[in-house]
Each structure stands twice: as structure tokens, then as C-alpha cells.
Length: 85
Image 1 (cartoon, one colour):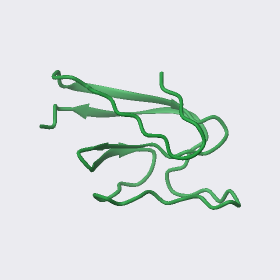
Image 2 (image 1 turned 45 degrees about the horizontal axis):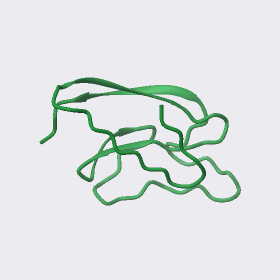
Image 3 (image 1 turned 90 degrees about the vertical axis):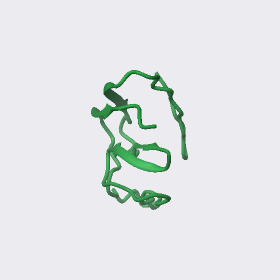
């Protein structure tokens, strides 16, 4: 389990040498957050629309307007890991 905090939080995970299905479980509680998965700068999956290389996700403003990909919930997403080397 990894815990984030206010602001941008980055986690790096080593998935090893075995390919397979990976499940990301998350709980962003009631404060919307966006989760994006990258490999070597390429967007793989996440809670919002796909991002291009070196593209940043949209930022929420102080009024709390919900923006693409920001969720305040418990959920999960899956991706197929095929040792992208």
C-alpha cells in the first residue's frame, strides 16, 4: 500500500521480469485525485483521458471544479504488463 499527500505524489514500482495482468486499487476518499501510469514517459493507463509524452494532466482550480480524470472514490483499473523493454 502506498499513501500520497497533498500535491503531486510520484511512486516508482519495479514489476519485475514476469509479464501479466496488473491491478491498481485506489481510494482517493472524497477529495478528487487523478491517477496516471507512465512507462518511459509514455502514458499507459489511468483514471482520465490518455496523455501524450511530456504532457501534464489538467489541473483543478481552487473552486473545486471537477476536471477530466479526477475521482473521489474507491475503484481500480487493470493493464497488461508485457515487460516493456
